[in-house]
Structures are given as C-alpha cells and as structure tokens.
Amino acid sequence: MAKNVRYSLKVLTGPNSNLTVPLGLAPVTVGSGRQDAVRVSDHGILPEHLKVFPNLDETDPDSEPEGWGFAYVSGVQISNSVNNARFGTIDEGMTFDIGETRLEVIVTSRDTMMSNMGTVSKPSGTVTAVILGLFMVLTFGYVGWFYYQQSQVTKPRPGYIEIAQLLRAADGRIEPVIDKCLSAPINLSEDEEVHQVATDPSYTFVLLREALDGSSQQSELRQTFVRDLNDRFQRAVLLHTTRNFEGVRKELQSVVDRIPVSPDNCVIVRAVLSDLDRLNRRDG
Image (cartoon, rainbow, N blue to C red; front, side, top):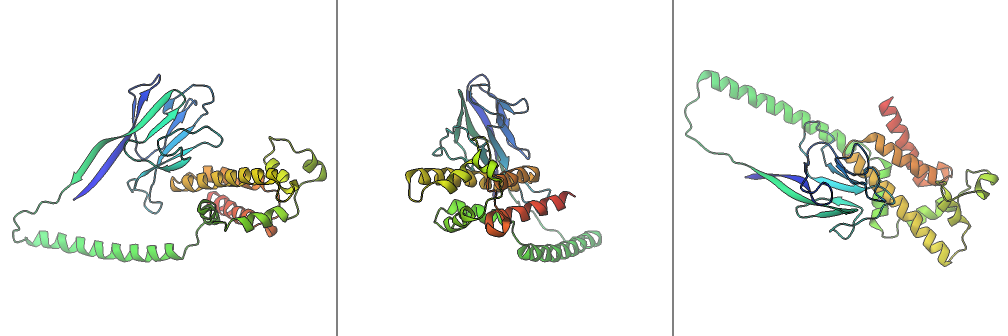
C-alpha cells in the first residue's frame, strides 16, 4: 500500500488570508510581482521572493513530483520555521513569513492505492494473447530502461553540481580552490580594478584580493564572498531539478561575472564556463 501526499500553501495572515494554492507540476511563487501566485506588497518584498517547486525526474517527462523544494531569491530577509533556511524540502506544518503574510504547508489529500485480489478464472485465448503481449512489452521495456540507466551512470555530472556540493559541505575542501582563484591574474583593466563600486559583480572579489592576510576585514569579506557563491550554486542546482535551464544559465553567468579571472587559473570558472557552453549548445 503506497500513499501519495499532495500539499498546498495556505495563507494564514495578511491581505490574502485563507487563500489556498495547490502544489502541482508548476512552481508557485510568493512576492511582489504581478505573476506571483501569492501577492505580497509589503516594503522590502521582491518579485519571486519565495519559490516552491516540484522535484521531478528529469529522465521521465510524465513523472509525478517526488517532493517539493523551496528557495528564496538572493539578498532578502528570511523568516521560516526551519531555522530560517534559504532553501530545502517542504513538509507538513512548515511556515513561511513574507512581510505581514504567513503561509503554512498543509496536506490536502492522501491518495491510497490498494491492490485487491479477486477470484481468478481460467483465461480465454484472447486474454492469454493480451497477457503475453503485455509481458513482451514489459520485458523489452525493461531492457530498454536498463540500458538507458547504464548510459546515465556513465554520463558526466555538470561541474557546477560538484562545486555546489563542496560549498555546501563546508568542510574546508573548497578553501584551496578559492585561494587559487584569488591568487590568479585578474581579467580587469587597471582602471576597472581601481574604480570598482559596490554594485559591480566583482566588487567583493577585488576587495578580497586587496585585503591584508589575516585581517578581520579579510575574514568578513571572505565569508561574504563564499556565502554569495554558495547561494548562487545552490539555486542553480534547485533550478536544475525543475529543468529551468534558463534560470541555471543566469545563475552560472552571475558566478563568472563575480570571479574575473582566466578559467585556466580557476577551477570554479572553468567548470562554470564548460557548463554554460553545454547549456548553450543544448538550446542551439
């Protein structure tokens, strides 16, 4: 007996109180944008401030969601019942606070599929032929599925997923990789490097290169830089699960813009540019 749990987002407080949005095959967004499923116009709320999306099997376009994840847009304040996590997997009872609006994850149905055994009668010739045909279809289908799975095993994973895992592990393995990128020759003119402003994507990277070793400024800048990288890579992975490859491309390009060094001298840039090239050829 298997259970298929279906969730919805219910608005508990705010202008849209009592609104319930079912979670299906399309992402559900909460924010100040016109296209957001739940509109919140409070100060500081951005379009697509929060996104809830299905985790689908990329190899099967007809698959049902294996669960639902959530992720916030970069740079916003976070308030939820799971230690203010920036991204993760939803579950019953989880709450999100967006401005004055509170949303709760509720279960809307629990479909139970049961198999009942009936009286077995001797099959007729037609029934026997149908059963034999189904057996052959299933057999050949399984063989095809097996070889497809084998091909997926040997298929290389995108480099940005590997880097996202290193960043998320927070066990120090990413540190020497970042150090090498910071020590590489920078791909900016002297004028561009000197006149960096806070709105420039590479601003933190350039400041970090100039900070004194061991200073408190360097430590804070490094934490900011690594946290920003981690957010972008984790969002790319989450967008990958929803097959939003345009979103993945934007996140990866933002990483390249933040690390202005040659791919020959930085594993992160090399992996991201390789994946961007693969995504561009995929859509070409």
